Image (cartoon, rainbow, N blue to C red):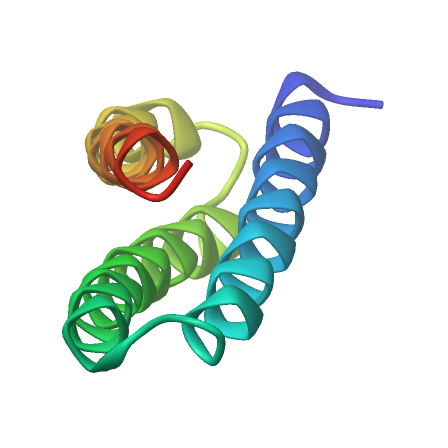
Length: 95
């Protein structure tokens, strides 16, 4: 397995894990009061936008050749970090 393939698998696995966490938040939002629901849904929308941006970067990375993927890796990591920070914030906010 190449470094590119291993990196892609790592990113995909984490994105899938975060997707499951977002779905759990969505389920918990239904049990919250009206203000809580608004906060949950606002946070969920933000997380989904960041998740979509990360998936787009991953798609670019997949299309890149073996030589070019290292150049795209930094953009992927920026999207990754942004989503990771947003997930941490949401977790702490909604515990």
